[in-house]
Length: 439
Image (cartoon, rainbow, N blue to C red; front, side, top):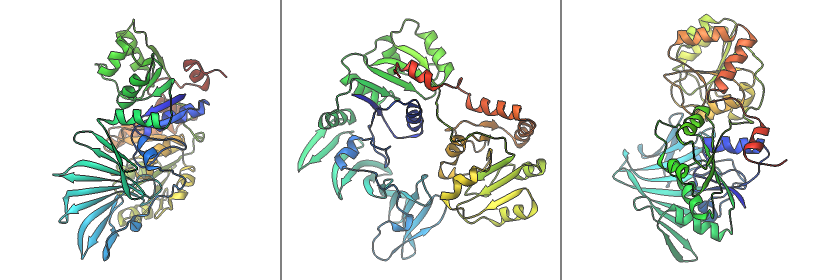
């Protein structure tokens, strides 16, 4: 069976899955951890034994969290709501980045002290409470995972042992690797070709199940001067890896130069299928924020009368932004934007100004990149997770923006510079060739 084994359903994994899907490569997706969401038809040992599905993906609105009688839940910021009892804050509902005021976790305080969390409840994409972590002296020591309200998996975060409860029978595993191998047996999964994107548990598992090297590692992380020990071991004497694919051409060259005689195949592929539309060079910029601290906004407005800038928020806006909206004809404010309308508003612009301080609401930078917008970021607020053109001050940003808007060729060149920071753009045929996929 051809499978993918991933640690988490995180941003890098989502990009890899999207690239494989774009290339027409379909495989079974397995995840070591479960953090409340998985792609369609994917599974982890936790979701397998909890019998979780994600047919409903609406989430839980913050004021729907079950609390004791006479407790209140009050929204206080763009990131959380307070749980109160008789006017005293006893907990916090922390919002997910995947929707407007949807629940991610709930912290419960000891004696109303927010510095002393005694337990944390976790809610999944379907709005169900699926796990609780218990704390001692500010650190979690145990996590319970639930099926129908009863703990079926108990993870000791100190010893790393895992207890599985099946029909009143308790099975103890020394670590996640053992737990995963047991899950493979129970689910009757027999892998003969594996894709991974981590040197942690996925590689540990691949080493155990591989009769011969049958695993491709997609390396999507930074690479320092010293090669990670687990990668170095495989490069010198492969037990699991038959191939490493880098998404940064410099990383490929670095490893090629240091391990000339390795038996592991080394290749490069960029992400593909990233964009939902073309950039059409429209002189309109967009910002989504939950803060009125927007670095250099007035300077940009004063410098570029021809640039229409839309600032949107899921909440009401401050008087500071309202005054700017009255002052500048090229500034358009959208307070209380309905989340379902975000994509349509972003589609009207081809520039994203990453200049707001604070949280990047609703994965907006990911969405801006997917919409093929050219993203201009101030270093003070830059998110390291996404490609953008970065500037240390407003003057340098304005100078580049003037150049970008001077011609379509310059605009296109700057956009390609942003996209190809790590190497040339790959095609579907490159994926087929490197991964030896026959049409």
